Length: 102
Image (cartoon, rainbow, N blue to C red):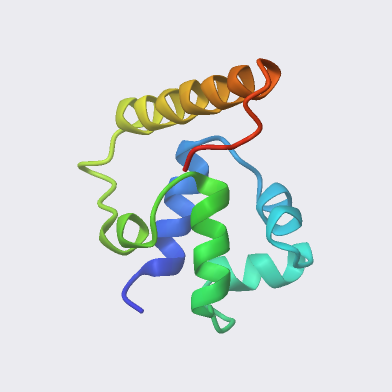
């Protein structure tokens, strides 16, 4: 995989997330996650997919991430859009509509 570990680290840092948070979210110990991010451990597609979910991005986004083009403002916009979607889903659940929209 081309620069995937570095891309993951850059995206995580742009979002202000800690390695321990990502590790706990994907169900691995902190040391394992640090090794994944350093490129010193095998990064399976399953783990890559789970990391992408936690970061709120797609696997193709991680693969093609360019720190020069993917500014903090763009990351903030995606996070805001995700938050608005989640708020709408929560509101629908509170109103008795028990189906989440994907």
